[in-house]
View 1 (spheres, rainbow, N blue to C red):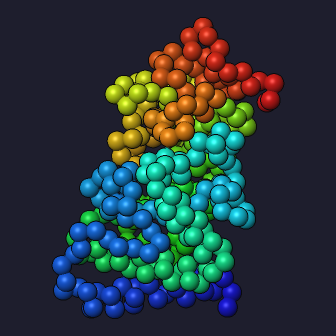
View 2 (cartoon, helix red, strand yellow):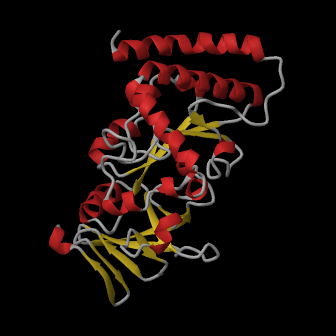
View 3 (cartoon, rainbow, N blue to C red):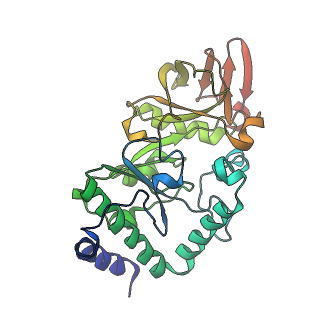
Length: 301
């Protein structure tokens, strides 16, 4: 049976699966924690749990950690060296990344089984949503940068789930995903092509994520200046560590994130200094802090 024909059949079966599940478990008390097979619930990831809504995500292995094609095609060298898969509890608990690799291998080598488990998790999340009245948010790319439109098509629009992700994709290649998900572009000032791609996102007043080297007790700068098409553009900075719900951020903002894990020791400008005088020149791939030039990648443009 063809790949997309299989997905079409699953999309038709998802509601009967929920009805059957509700008949079996509808009269039982809701569990304190969702127990899922592939999808990570709020209790399984601290950042997903920073809100009152049911925020879930799919966490596979990033970049080339699992053998085969990269799950982060547009990742940079600094991004791979300081990947978020090495932060948080995964720094100390090896089984977390082993589980991500196992999910990736299942997706690549046995998609039918992956799809069965994925749908089983969807049914449990939908049942919880209906029984509790809790809104649902979903990240397909918890640790990857893939196009999940084929699995998104399984989830009916009337479920009213909020989909969101970070990405390093060029804007032109992101437009099909932007039809159903909120995307925040991840800026890496250590890599000139990434800086050039960011210009298109800023021109359309879309949000940009920037990592800052800062102590947790210090505030982010209140704004960040960019040079795009020869013009200075000032964007407000919001604290992206307070919640993971990027679709609630105001349009045209900079999402400030604190350096974590290995990135605390990085000095490549993948993470920017916590300064109020920063100017990020995306035209010439330069970063300045007042009179001091921190980065000049203009020769790579």
